[in-house]
Amino acid sequence: MIKINMGCGWRNFGSDWVHIDGGDYAHLDYKSITDLSQFKGETVDLIYSSHVVEYFNREEAASLLSEWNRVLKRGGKLRIAVPNFEVLSKLYLDGTLKLEQILGPLYGQMAMSKNVIYHKTTYDFKSLEKVLTNAGFRDILLYDWKKTEHSEFDDHSQAYYPHMDKENGILVSLNVECVKK
Image: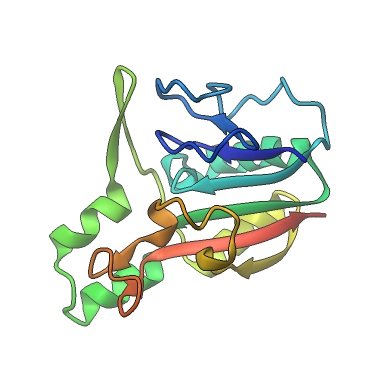
C-alpha cells in the first residue's frame, strides 16, 4: 500500500508513508508535490495533505489535483485539510475572533527554502467540492481527523479555536476526503 503525506513539512508519519515536501527535512523521500513523475499512474492508495492546497491559486490547484488524481488508484483516497473560510468568517462576524486572529489561517505565510510563500486562496465546503469534482473526484465528504490513521500527528487538520482546545473548541480546518472516480 502506497500512502503519501503530501506537503508534510517536519511531520514524519513513519516508514510506511512516503513523505513529500519542498522543505529541507531528513525524512523526505521527494521534494516536489506538483511533479509526481516518479510514480506511475494509478499506483497510490492514499494521498494526505494538510493545509497545503491553499498555497496554490485556483488554476494551480486544479493542475495540482489533476496530478494527484493521476497517481491515485481508481477508488484511491484523497484526504485534504484547508483553512475553513466559512467557520473563520462566522467567528469573525459574531465577534468571537478579531481580524488579526484570522489573518494567519486565511493569508498565512511560510518560509520555504529561500522563499516566503503565502496562501493564495481559501475555501468553504461547496467551493472545495467543486474544485475536487472538476479534478475527477467523487464521494466528497467531511472526515473526522480523530478517525484517521494519522490522528496521532498534530497538524493543522486539528486546528481549533481556542487554540488546542480539541474537546470544547471550534474546528477551523475544513477536512475533506474523497475518492478517485
